[in-house]
View 1: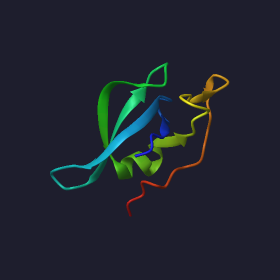
View 2: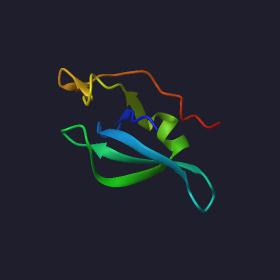
View 3: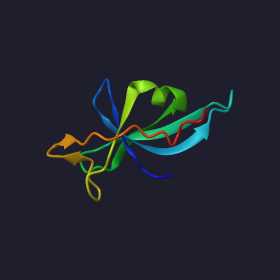
View 4: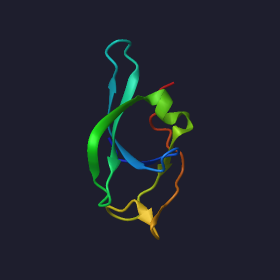
Length: 88
């Protein structure tokens, strides 16, 4: 899976999706993701959120500015919405 960078709209935190799986109880598709640290590497605990929730506007995809960089001029570089994970 490509590692794309996402901005959480409410907190302005940057995150990366690590994997996709299914919730056991109802087989709903879920993203597994982590916050990005200052060095643009995943840090902290893993979060799990239904794909439909993740893509409902709570997160906005950001593009990578060069190798290993998630920012441009000290701010996230806004990109296009990625529909590769749309499952409907």
